[in-house]
Length: 395
Ligand code: FAD
Ligand code: UDP
Image (tube, rainbow, N blue to C red; front, side, top):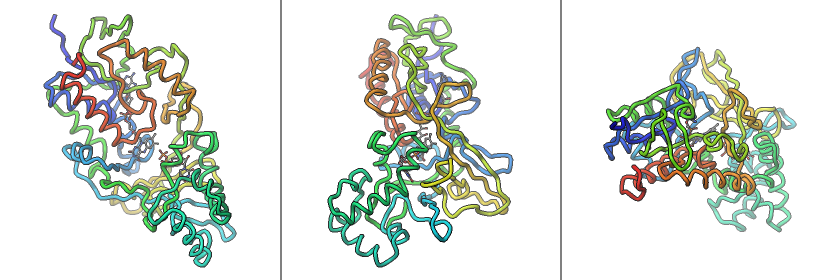
């Protein structure tokens, strides 16, 4: 019997949606997309809330990339609203609360230490590292100059250590150094959170962008379908609905789940989101405010800054609370906890997946990596390049 589909994509987030579109369009493949949620878009999904505010249901997502290829590819499915994200740290102080830019920069230095002291500290920093340099907090703490070391301690105490404890349950020294390196001390007056060449928000939101991407005659989308109920993997062969499936399978979910947790559960952090709608135009000073010293939540994001939605007298914010993922019903694994031990466990699953020549692990969960959206899009495009050039035998 002729098979109905050439390829299967499990998941309709950035990874699954981009791969499905490329295989369907450039490869002429008939692609089935299985998505277990009742909507497309993965964690980038957005929708209107009860107050009519456009919100991100799985935490704030800001698009930024240095990859022209990624930007051009997504631009086929959306126009962009120019948006340069700015974040401030909100810190209790003698006079109430203080706010200054994160990443900690020369403007933050002035706000924290006053103009005079800031000038001398900035001089020392610029002499040591040079202008417009980004220095990780762990690197800054190694500086032998006592004045710079004292400043590094201040930034560590007021920006990093408690936020990191809330987010990861571990100190900045205990987590993967690449994580705090995402938010370095920046010897600049540039107060944007990202310096990437291309930044913005999909003009009408992420969900319409995903709709446009998945809208192709060769793509069949099935929502509310957990692939694990339809797939069987054994002896190097994959069955779909009980019949052998030799086409490409792109799996973008958690790999430990795919193999029934056979080597044990991969550790993740999950988040609880608490949304509040307030009867004001704007509730806070910036798109995101990080609570780097106190409060149980890590940050508050106000969506109207990100989306540019014009909606007087109403605004919705979200507070993020991080905790260990346990696998309980309703929990979502958001952040892989990168460590040598966890990576070794992941490698066991990856090796097992290698026994299935038509199975490809793609995405933030399936690859157990801390990838931004743009990195996922690029990986999807590159995987499909290889598949369509026949570098992989099973397409
Ligand atoms: P996901 O978006 O997780 O999609 C995976 C999909 O697979 C999901 O829809 C899931 O339901 C589905 N799935 C899983 N298992 C199965 C199964 N068995 N059967 C069927 N379907 C299944 N990146 C940025 O670039 N900018 C940001 O500002 C940003 N902010 C973020 C904020 C938060 C709180 C988080 C957690 C992440 C953020 N990211 C951001 C990262 C971004 O979310 C990811 O890079 C991106 O969503 C990864 O896409 P993906 O397709 O790999 O995974
Ligand atoms: N971080 C911090 N304080 C901040 C911002 C970030 O300590 O004000 C650290 C923290 O460990 C965090 C990491 O830097 O997990 C990466 O921050 P980013 O904003 O990139 O995290 P994400 O948006 O991916 O949750």
